[in-house]
Picture 1: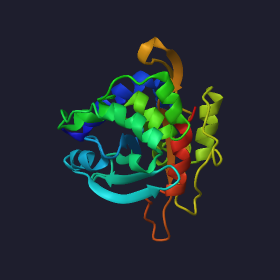
Picture 2 (picture 1 turned 180 degrees about the vertical axis):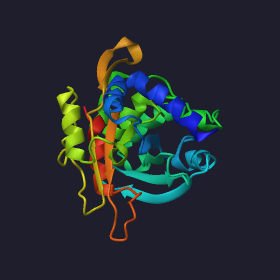
Picture 3 (picture 1 turned 180 degrees about the horizontal axis):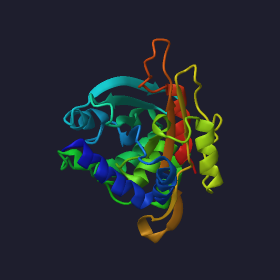
Picture 4 (picture 1 turned 90 degrees about the vertical axis):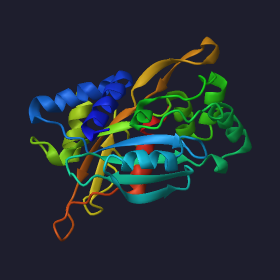
Length: 264
């Protein structure tokens, strides 16, 4: 699949459950013209047919190469980032929950659902395919939430893009992340304040911020209906090093706090 078509499909699926994203996109498009996407992110379960090692070849097939790897020990995650030779193509950040490191109770809940996965997707459409398992129960969702918000989110939402990211470097009206977040808040959207509104510093070469996830009424197994977090919109400002090269990677400490944009 061509990368342009890939991101068009992702955006269509994303705004369907994240209506704030289209509103924020249009807010900046009205004053800054084209809104450039810095990167997207995905979540998945390890030790399943949708594990990170299964998804990686589908990303590489679009011309990407692996950029770096990351570990988030407290959240029991590992991740890879991918970069495309065309600098205009967004980067991809893909993480997986290390299910074997969770409690026996959490593993049992996840396994009950992921055992239903069949390896039917062999192309990039898997990235907007949502759940590959039965609708979870409200009790299972809540029990898992107590140990892994990431796992509970994924159990309900499934495999789909977790967020898009506005590239502040490409905005024309401002290049300051504080200004961007201020404009988002003034428009009525809440931002993630875990670790501060801005994660990172100019010295670390990457500053990031995000909205809190949109919310959607979800029908759980048995007909229980509850409002839960879906996806969010991120904002990234990349800085140049002493040689004048703009940093293109990711910082684990920043990403660790960005993950919490989907917290209940």
